[in-house]
Every structure is written in structure tokens, then in C-alpha cells.
Length: 105
Image (cartoon, rainbow, N blue to C red):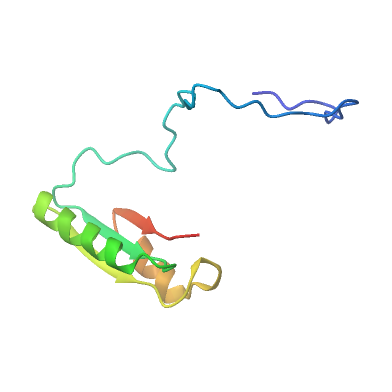
């Protein structure tokens, strides 16, 4: 998508119109990274970034371990929240082949 040369400055108010049928438009999935072809022999980090979801993230890790026994699932509770993650937290999260981030912000 090409960048416009000049910023859009409307002369009239801009309104957001909601679909009265209460349906979201179809949006294509766009992940941050490519999906893994398989979980076999992969290390999956389930990182809890806190915010009131501790029990849910623990159950996600346990359920993933049960559903995909061929992978190594590691539950990791960070020392802080997203804004103040320590280097130790980043090192742990980057040590996996994939990371499931859990937060409630």
C-alpha cells in the first residue's frame, strides 16, 4: 500500500458507522511470524504477562501438554508486566520455537 504524500485533513466531521447486523467484516489472518508446520519436537513457551489471567494461562499450558505430547511445553510466569520485562523474561520467551503470550490489558 503506497503512502499518501499529504495527510488527510477532513473539512467535515468523520463518523464511524457500525453495521446494524452486528457482524464483523472478514479479516485475513496476519500473524507476527510464520506458523510452525508441526509441534513435534518443538519448545512452546506459555508466557504469563499477568493482569488477572494466571489460572487461564496455567490451564492453557496444561491442556497443550496433553493435546500435543510430542512437544515440550514450558509455562513461564514473568517477573513483571509488559512495560517492565526483565532481560531474563525476554531470554526465556525467546528460547522457544513459539510463544503463547497471555495478558489482560
